[in-house]
Length: 151
Image (cartoon, rainbow, N blue to C red; front, side, top):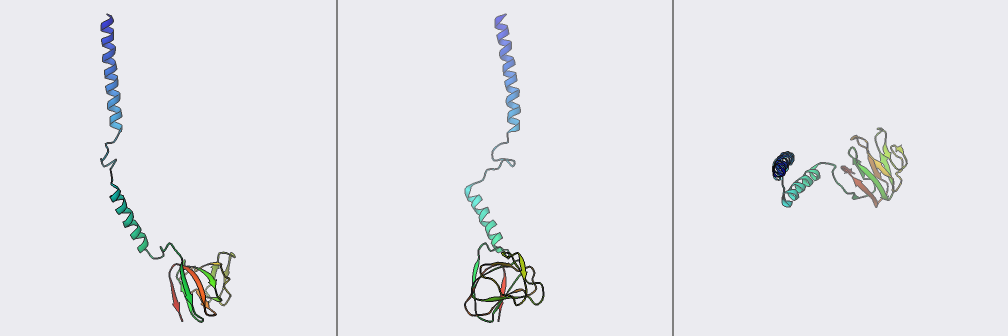
């Protein structure tokens, strides 16, 4: 009887193990399948390169600041969202009565004809002719965004 009981216990253990193994295997996706794809480094590099090119092709996606040199009498008119920092020289706001530029450093608007403070971050709120005018030679600006320089 002892042998029969051991045999029965082995059979039960094999059946329980088989059921457990099948259920665990059913929950694990096969590597390389649609639900668990395998990719190569070259594929990931290609996708990242395409994504970078896409982002760089969008207007206003410039990640860096551009240095702009202006002469007396020139005006820089920014598009909506353009950021401006006066680094050197004297400049005033150009806004044609539209509300001015947002001086983020001071937390206020500066309007047409007011002096721009050096090292203050300015933001152009709309595409309606707002910007800065060089009042002397050697005006140096840091710009992030789209703009037009007019005489």
